[in-house]
Length: 214
Image (cartoon, rainbow, N blue to C red; front, side, top):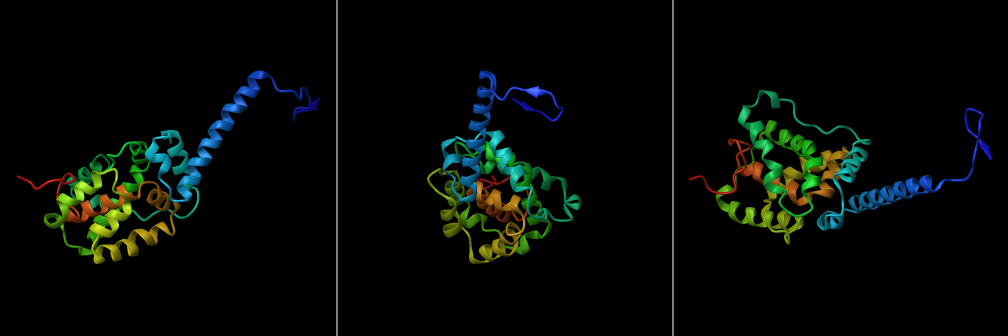
């Protein structure tokens, strides 16, 4: 037998209850480790299969927030019109339509809102709206589970928008683990949000436009 920190004797044998508790803890730790490994590899397999719980997403978010500096969310957001904030609240519901992604978008919504705030306070570097030219195809691609983030990047981003992304979001992701993890976990949803914000004139509406106003 061994002694604990109080000096009293304790048994070195584990009871069946302790074994069950440890087994459960090991299972949780294993699942979380697998999920974290998936994120670090840039894989969305677990998300698409719906095998990652909201608790595990929260763990991933807290882990990613523990290193790196805080992201830049813009410094003039409070001076923007109220409808701008209303628009931001509609982003997740618009782009997080695929099975298995709802929990991820809920956990990372604050981070997505941070990117939105950064974009609108900088007026999207005056990128022109491409709404009339691409909205129909963009909405279709963003809602199609068989279309991935590379399709959005290659087929919908203009050269100017790619340069904007690299100079603004990518630069932040290199410094902020929170942005980096969001980009790896929900890349398609993030890219779709970015283009919707640009197309909605960064922004002049109270919700994401998915079709031409009548």
